[in-house]
Image 1 (tube, rainbow, N blue to C red):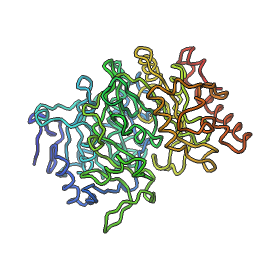
Image 2 (spheres, rainbow, N blue to C red):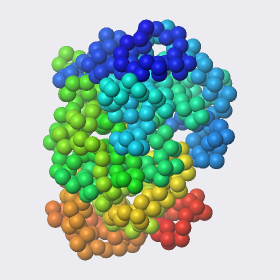
Image 3 (cartoon, rainbow, N blue to C red):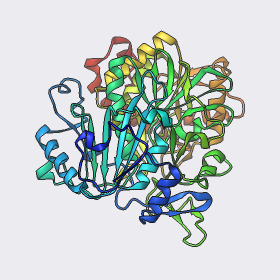
Image 4 (cartoon, rainbow, N blue to C red):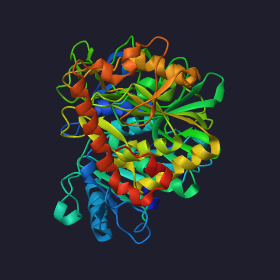
Amino acid sequence: MDQGQVNPSMKLEDQGITGLGYVYYNRDEAQLQDAAVAAGEGVTGKGGAFLVTTGKHTGRSPKDKFVVRTASVEDTIWWENNAPMAPEKFDVLYTDMLEHMKDGSYDVQDLFGGADPAHRLDVRVVTELAWHGLFIRHLLRRPQAAELQTFVPEFTIINCPTFKADPARHGCRSETGIALNMDAKLILIGGTEYAGENKKSVFSLLNYLLPEKGIMPMHCSANHAPGNPVDTAVFFGLSGTGKTTLSADPSRVLIGDDEHGWSDRGTFNFEGGCYAKTIGLDPKAEPEIYATTSMPHTVIENMIFDPETFELDFDDDSLTANMRCAYPLNYIGNASDTALGGHPKNIIMLTCDAFGVLPPISRLTPAQAMYHFLSGFTSKVAGTERGVTEPEPTFSTCFGAPFMPRRPEVYGNLLREKIASHGATCWLVNTGWTGGAYGTGSRMPIKATRALLAAALDGTLVENTFRKDPNFGFEVPMTCDGVDATLLNPRDTWADKAAYDAQAAKLVGMFSDNFEKYVPYIDDDVKAAAIG
């Protein structure tokens, strides 16, 4: 039985998905939350937020993600980073999942990936859990009612958390399986309730499709100056580096917090919402994000709360350190109505340095920018992926290796071409440790980071005197209003200078070793910018 607004010639049965029980098309936020509560998927909390836990999967499962190896993608997928699945195994997986779905109730959300109508992807998301429908309705962009009547999905995602994959039968690794088939235009997700797999599947798709159109897909947040979309800044960084926090600056207009494209027309958000980490969320430091946790239909994922008062505990990470909230972009008061910006004037690469040796900000040449983009140095922070319990130094190319279907150089060259065509000042910002490594030093003060970023974005920082860092070769400002000058020279923040030198040498060596694999694919100017 069908309910809801949908293109009458593009129901699930028109896609060969038959035998289901109730199918609910494009329910709104209130309907989805009511259905989720009625089904026992979660509870309604303070302010009408929806509180849910996701079981054993509280983060992404990158080792359980596969790309179907067909002739059309054989030469374009980065197979060293994307596990292959045989087409015949995918076919069995799809058949088995459809059988699993028989007689069940499912929600269908028809949504757009991309704020720019010229480059958006029309995506249908079929979910076993009503709250997954609520989540993805927040995270992607919602068509108008009239647009639903003619909506034809380019790709379809089917998410069945109760479906358990069989490694021998389906060609996967465990009971959890995420399989992307470019030819069939299907993504199957099974065996995990973690909602982030839904949005990251769309991001992976766009990361594959957009470079063919000369568009740079970016794992970044973005904002622009009030009344001036031309003054756009993008913030690259992995989870936990500060993308969401730093881009939600009340003095600037938020374009989006996680995923964007850079076309010949400028910057555009892929999403219609935000998916923010809530551990340690401070109402004074991050009032806009904090406020969303008690707003109607915000999805609160894996947070401990008082069962009587529904008061959230922002410090209890007993379920996971990757606790999150998902909410529509318009819940942020300074969010852009269009989610569009100009060509980036400033490019910020965020890193969380657990070694405690990188300065809080440094200026990069275009060649250095490509080098650091390809390197993607940061520290995985606790909870983002299964098994990560404390910061772990890592190199995640393009600041998003798990979501990169193509080779890194494809994205690196696109970035360099965009910078060459449109110009941008590039910065590397360390939101990690200072005064010592993780366990000895302290986290970089967010007040200092905000002051340095403000000076970078308003153009005053470039007027300062810079020094060349002896270890990494980039330029570091010697002063900045409102920032202790000692902080700008990391060596000065360490009590043991010899220990700093040893840590810096160790990190230089890690950069050098990691970059060896890119050397055959890059130009001489980037080779010259290499560290070590």
